[in-house]
Image (cartoon, rainbow, N blue to C red):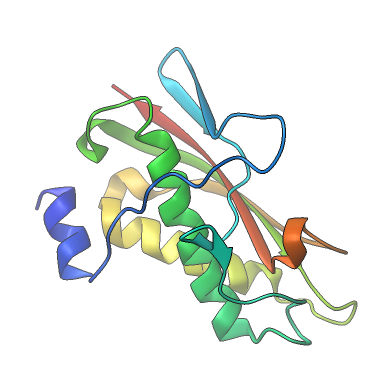
Length: 152
């Protein structure tokens, strides 16, 4: 099934690329790899939720934020290709979780993005990944995500 049809079936759209918040670009292509900058879960330029996972933000909410980060990262990849069909492989996800000191389920927050990328891309979505906790993220976001993708 074409990726656009899969997105439609999942009730998802690729949003406009969020504007950079500092001195960087949203993504960079080097050869057949596209590296995204860290993507926050911005929707129309704003965070839906702020705070630490395990305190102000629940695990389920953080998983949804990770999904939004992934959609924003896909938008950043589209700056270098014409269609998501040109993605040959999602190589790696990096997930940063702003969490309370006692929160230890960062890997489950990252699953929000990992499971979504598998739903969208199937076998091409299988990836390496890291998920780690941090004391804070820009704008008090709960999640930030980066992607490395191989493209045609």
